[in-house]
Structure formats: C-alpha cells, structure tokens
Image 1 (cartoon, helix red, strand yellow):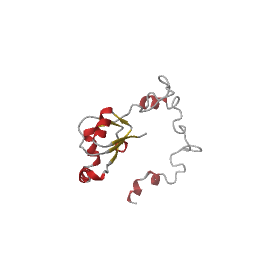
Image 2 (cartoon, one colour):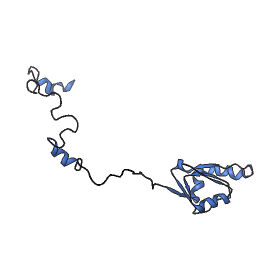
Image 3 (cartoon, helix red, strand yellow):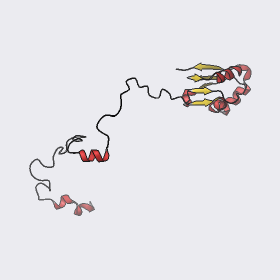
Image 4 (cartoon, one colour):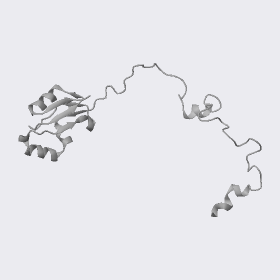
Length: 150
C-alpha cells in the first residue's frame, strides 16, 4: 500500500473521534432517509433539480387504454421480404404440393396488413390483427388465406 502515507486515517491515528465529533455524531441518517424533507429541509434541492415533483396536475382518466391506437402497418409488396428468399424459392418449386408459408405479422412487429403493391401468384397464409379489404382480396386471389389473430 504505497498511498498509505497520504491517507487521512493515518494522520488521525491517536485522535479518538477521527474528526467526527463526540457522542452520537456522524451516525445514522442526519437528513432523514430517502426523499424525506422534500417540502421542508431539502426543499431547495427539490425545487432546483426536481421541479413539479409535488402536487397534482389535470384530471384523472379512470378508463385509460394505453396505446389503443397503436397499429403499425405493412403493405403487401413487403410481405414476401419478411419470409425470405429461400422460402420463396422453395414455394415456387413446390407449387403443386399445396404448401404455403405462414407469416405471423405480430411476431415481426406489425398489426395491420394494407393492400398496396402486387403479390406473386403463390399461396401464403398471413396471421395479423387487422387486414384491409384490398389486402384480403389480393391474398385470396393468390390462393392464400387471412387468419385473424387476437
């Protein structure tokens, strides 16, 4: 320990209380525990660094539905890019077998499928929370299916 010479504790050896006063000093929680005293003895700190911490603002909404309008969308022309080229090539080869890939849009972070763009004439099964009419018609024309997901 090469730093030992410079430490304050070495200097205070022999002095009983090491600079913390007599009985009961430098103990426990002199300012209170946690956020105690925010309205009283710690008020300056709270007003300066945490303005608006105390009090109420506005009205309460008892039936708040968070993110009920959150509905990320994707268009038909991007649908096969989620599946991947490898799966698409396999589907093109095995068209007669009747196998179709299943795409769950919610797993990819989309809730609604919109109908912009063209689909290849390959069957595909799509699971999503919402479909537009155009998208549903185009998928069914290609020989696929639309499955609603909760």
